[in-house]
Length: 472
Image (cartoon, rainbow, N blue to C red; front, side, top):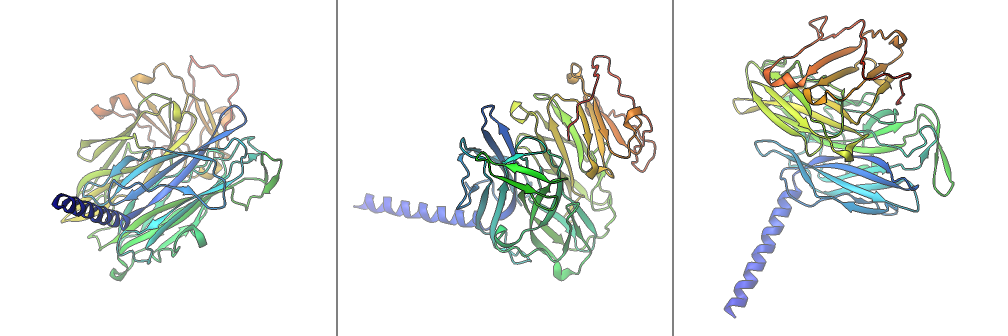
């Protein structure tokens, strides 16, 4: 009898402990992101690859996205959650999950959702429960002849800004189909509730969040709940497997994905000048929204460097594929390395990062920088009208790439590409094999980071193309 009583007590204590842990985890939500890629199976069917980030205070819990009631999401296969990055003081942890959706009978659009409770404590804009939705569009597009791919983006769980400093958060908004990407605040059933932060203003066309100096009464954490949508550049027709068609105009969103995270408005900083207390990025750190290219099974190394004269740079924080590795090289120098596999071939993957510094127990963040990495053995001829004012090309060369030949020709209305003259084209050549020796070659024609190269000739004797394929 005594043994049975002891066993019962142990079971009760185990249940109470489990409830306590679950309750603790459930009140520390830091946001989520989901994107998707359709994969043609070659037999008339499509498998949808849905990648998502889950951010909590702890690196535990088994929360996952589910099919919204009333939709046919096909057969869903869930992968294990894998850690992306965690803040060294235990503030947050971000993990990445993968869902595969297969439906052999229909390519009808469907919706996924994530819901639960609660966000982290003391959210200023009053958000407690979390809810996010993703609208997946798989009907055949008349312009590409394929299913739609969502915009590709990611975000860190938390971004910091002192209450007395102006700051813009330029979110990554890249669309593999070449669609126009816009952002808006979540509305209606897309969150629970959807009250936007009063201290942030959103520029929809550029997906830019702006913070202006405010008073101390507005300090604290804010839940940001955005929706990112893609719009066709001209009217297109979407065709379902049963023959039904629908027309999408330039004002009709094709798909929608959520971007949810926390902005922490901290007490005033002694100075808002970058490089004093707030870390300042230095070359050869890639510019925001840079586009990088890497072949399958090759190592991509991204150098990141920052300085802060009056605070101590402590760490690099990032969001991206779960198998990206970071290296602390000391003195404000870091690197991110990634080796994409065959599964990522032909896809574009987002990576975002900030540098964190501390001074007198205060934490300071650099500006947010994001980039997109396209995987594959391609020759690119991009026309990206949306990025004409801030298009940067990075050519990474290392001894491991000597057998690969790449030609990247970027064209916009401002470029006279017939003569291969690039006006206001930002180009930086990184030689990653020499990175550890701090040997870089920058083609700067001005100290203000306007890498103006009036003429750049791509001539590679091992690659002779009679024409240049176009990817739009």
